[in-house]
Structures are given as structure tokens and as C-alpha cells.
Amino acid sequence: MKPAPFNLFRPRSLDEALGLLESYSDEAKVLAGGQSLVPLMNFRLAQPHNLIDLNGVEGLDKITIDDRILTLGAMVRQRDVERSPLIAERLPILREAIEQVAHPAIRNRGTVGGSLVHADPAAELPLLSIALDAIFHLRSSRQSRSVAARDFYQGYLITDIAPDEILVEIDFSLPPVGCGGCCTEIARRHGDFAIVAAAALLDFGRDGSVNFARVALGGVGPAPLRAAAAEEALMGMKAGPELYRRAGDAAGKAVDPPADIHASAAYRRHLTGVLVRRALATAASRVKGRA
Ligand SMILES: Cc1cc2nc3c(=O)[nH]c(=O)nc-3n(C[C@H](O)[C@H](O)[C@H](O)COP(=O)(O)OP(=O)(O)OC[C@H]3O[C@@H](n4cnc5c(N)ncnc54)[C@H](O)[C@@H]3O)c2cc1C
View: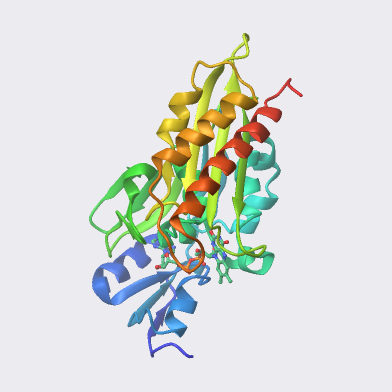
């Protein structure tokens, strides 16, 4: 199918884009990589009268990193994250997550901001934003504001972004240096959205007990979430396979996943336990200085 007719605007600056968005408000959508929006328009599930193309807006595609924070401009392509040596070195879990997003052709166009705002509950970038306590920086003609990832995701494809706001950049907090991480998932075919996805970050103290744990899940609810029960089970405990199994079990018990044509709720719950255990074991094997 073809999309319904629309007007296309190509602003060159953020202020121009924000002005257009304010003028057209509910009647407009911003276009980033188009990898989610254009299919929705082609199926006429989305029919914006005005499309504001962010691809010519300067300054939204920067990648910067310091000791504590990785900042990605909203228009950074997923493929650029995947290929960034800085990210590979300091935050390899992000690269591992993005490698599981669709296929290279889609990642060449798809943007970080587009994926975060589209908010598919099984998508890898929203999952990582939850695991890494990301902060989303939003702008409108009225104001600038920042929202924590845990507050940004409010329901199935529902986020805390107003019709006149643009996501400008995202801060991902960096885990401790030497910390191990893993993002893993089960999908029906390579490149499909995950049925369930798990991201884990782990670090140990000198005595071998866990002193840093982050576990996040995608595909088990209307929005990605932190597996608080698993994190609690891990903190302060002696690391090892039995602990990862217990944390996986705790995560599986705590979720209330949906059933759909891809999987039953029981299967998703089972996958949660298995994937959390696997993600933790792999993350542990990647902690610097350990086998
Ligand atoms: C076949 C296929 C398989 C896929 N598989 C996966 C997968 O396995 N995992 C995965 O995570 N994704 C997958 N995707 C989606 C892909 O990652 C998209 O690139 C992503 O969801 C949207 O990014 P985009 O830049 O293309 O955004 P667009 O499609 O341009 O926009 C998506 C939505 O976000 C809004 N938006 C975009 N940027 C901004 C901004 N800066 N501020 C405010 N609003 C904004 C748009 O208005 C729109 O509502 C798949 C897509 C396809 C076509």
C-alpha cells in the first residue's frame, strides 16, 4: 500500500523543526530513519498530514563520551553505534544489543532516537536505556526537559513525549570500568523482534561477591522494565552459576508477560528465567580479570 497524501518539510535547524511541530501539533510527525514510521504510513495505520524530516537538521548526530556518560544525538544511526570504536571499548553491551536489531540495511537508516521514541516493548535500545538509567533530553518551542528512561516508557507504544516535542539527545550512564555485560534474546528468526530479551551488567568486589548488578527485560510487558527481584537476589552474594539460576528464577516469577501469536505467557516467563541466567553467566565471564 501507499501512504495517504502528506506535506513534507525539510527543516535545516532544530529551531525550525520545533517551530513547524508547534504550528502543526497533532497533525504532524517527525521523520527520522523511517524504518517504523514509513511502514505504519504505508499500511495507513499512521496518517500524519505533515511530515517533518529531521535528516537535514544539523547537530543531532553526535556521539560523545566522558568518564561517566555516553551521549548519543537522537539522529545517530544505529549502524554508527555498532561501528563506533569508543562504544565497542567502553560500552560493548550497547553494540551487542544493536547487532540484534533487525538487519544491516535497517540499521543503516534507523536512528537511536527513532527506536527509543517508537518504544516497541521488545526493542533492544529501549531495553538498554532502562538497563543503563538513560536520561532523555526533550525540546519543544515552549521548554527543554529531561526524563529518566524508567519514567519515559508508560505503556504499549506510549511514552512521555508531547506532540510538539523532539527527542534531542540521550545520556546513557556508563557502568563501572571492567564490569561485564550481555544482551541476549530469543526471536523466531534472526533479525525479528525478540520474543523476550534480557540485558545484564555485573561486577564483583575483591571477595568475589556481586557489588554491581543491572538486569533489564524486554518483551515481557507493555514496556521494557528493570528486573528488581533479580538485582536484589544478586547484590552482595557470592557470584557463581547457582546465584545466576536463583536470579533468573526470581526474574521469571516476578514478570506477568502477555500472550500473543508469537508465544504464550508461560513460555515468555520460562524464557525470562533462562535468558536472565544466561545473560548473567556471560556478563560474569566478561568481567575484566576473570575467566
Ligand atoms: C523489518 C524490520 C525489522 C525490525 N526489527 C527490529 C528489531 O529487531 N529490533 C528493534 O529494536 N527494531 C527493529 N525494527 C525497527 C527499527 O529499529 C527502526 O529503525 C526504529 O524502531 C525506528 O527508528 P527510525 O529512526 O527508523 O524512526 P522512524 O520510523 O522515523 O520514527 C519512529 C517514530 O519515532 C518518532 N521519532 C523519531 N525520531 C524522533 C525524535 N528525535 N523525536 C521525537 N520523535 C521521534 C517518529 O515520529 C515516529 O513516531 C525493525 C524494522 C523493520 C522494518
